[in-house]
Amino acid sequence: MNENLFTSFITPVILGLPLVTLIVLFPSLLFPTSNRLVSNRFVTLQQWMLQLVSKQMMSIHNSKGQTWTLMLMSLILFIGSTNLLGLLPHSFTPTTQLSMNLGMAIPLWAGAVITGFRNKTKTSLAHFLPQGTPTPLIPMLVIIETISLFIQPMALAVRLTANITAGHLLIHLIGGATLALMSISTTTALITFTILILLTILEFAVAMIQAYVFTLLVSLYLHDNT
Amino acid sequence: AASEKKLLEVKLGELPSWILMRDFTPSGIAGAFQRGYYRYYNKYVNVKKGSIAGLSMVLAAYVFLNYCRSYKELKHERLRKYH
Image 1 (tube, one colour):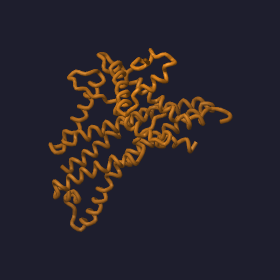
Image 2 (spheres, each protein chain N blue to C red; image 1 turned 45 degrees about the horizontal axis):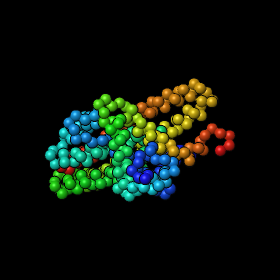
Image 3 (cartoon, helix red, strand yellow; image 1 turned 90 degrees about the vertical axis):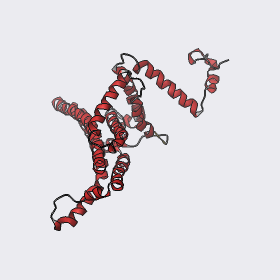
Image 4 (cartoon, rainbow over the protein chains, first blue to last red; image 1 turned 120 degrees about the horizontal axis):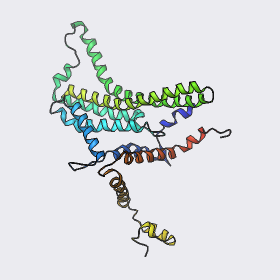
């Protein structure tokens, strides 16, 4: 059972060719574009949702920060759709791979920080020292703030990976437990099945929340630096 | 000649020559995918009263393809006495 538990997280390769590329590109098929003012229901729904999210997320930024709208909106759509698609049976979720999440987190965080350093050097450096600290504490606090700054991309990536992977693993385990318990004691199996239903609902929420959190944090780092 | 006929109108004996007649260049293959995508999109999604069926057929096909992909590992988990 140990080997079976983690086989769903192996990068899909077919005949040596990376099938994972197709799987990563698949969510883009689900977001059609339309140049019309009144388009079909599918596109209208997506446009409405995107407008809602972008207004909620980008309203806190100034005009320089709002140039990142396209990036952040595609980010939340990508992570949200990838996580939700991963809840389908037998599917592979690219966001469970730490490599991909690092690839998303590090450039975005670095871009925000470097923008801050280039355009508002004094304010960015001032972030290393919270206001009103007593003088003897200053060296230690600067060190701590530097560490907390550099841990931001790692935390972004690891948070997303761990949440999604843990959720998938729990679903696998509890589903397997339900199946195994069916022949032993039906009542316990029913209880386990209820737990499975609740867990699936949680996973749907987590899928979307993680996308939101990732994008929100990147936008926060951006706000600090513009 | 077997060229330029639709697939359903090609006689069985002409099938190999019809297949060889198809455009297998990268742009040809891309065109085939594009035509297939728009055929599905215009039939099921880009309509006045589109329903959930347009999206769920795509997701069902996705689930099925993933099942085919992981069949090799899944066949060990069947409830059999001998694997």
